Image (cartoon, rainbow over all chains, first blue to last red; front, side, top):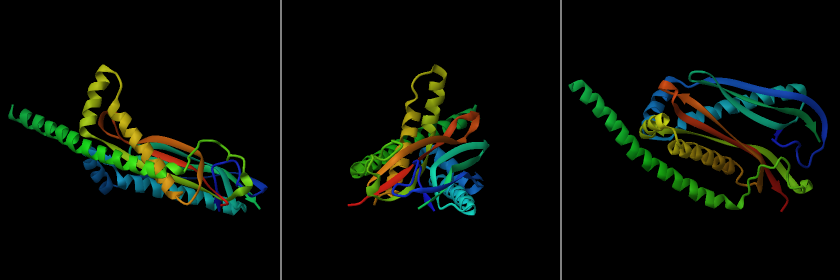
Length: 104
Length: 152
């Protein structure tokens, strides 16, 4: 699956549009990570556990989007956008969306 | 009275520790950011929507992204609660968000180390954990864009 966040896939011609595809996931941080983060909160610095957690969650959202595009018969997704929102205390939703299309 | 002193002592310890450890971590982080930014100077990152026009010379295009979560230290949090009362420029949070963003951009560039340019770069920031009294504890920065490789 080809993915870009510009309007086309450079060097390829668009054959067919399939419309919007999206994927989302809601993740909560678990207690062990939270305690470590609480300690890290005292001295500051990067929270590696959270960085990885959000990265994994975003990858999962992307793979859901890819799955949806594949079902429609697309082989590329253009204009991909990411959005993050906190839905509840300690949980955030990671949303990714784009336009599925077939290119040659 | 003794209880008050103990509480005050713990608070003072946390503030001092936050200041000392926080400054060391921050200066170390900034040094590493500056070094890696200097290394990546030859790879342009631009926010244009489209590529520079020579679209037929492009051999590969893909989505790259990088993220980073940076947390604030106890001293800065304390400083913020004081500034919040009087108002003014909150430098402690400025450096926090700045570090997160620059780190995220660097990680994105790391993914695209074999590409020539990253176009349409978008950077977004979100606060991921809010502690007591709704004070922001850590911020996440996400940078993403399309990495392009030209025919050499």
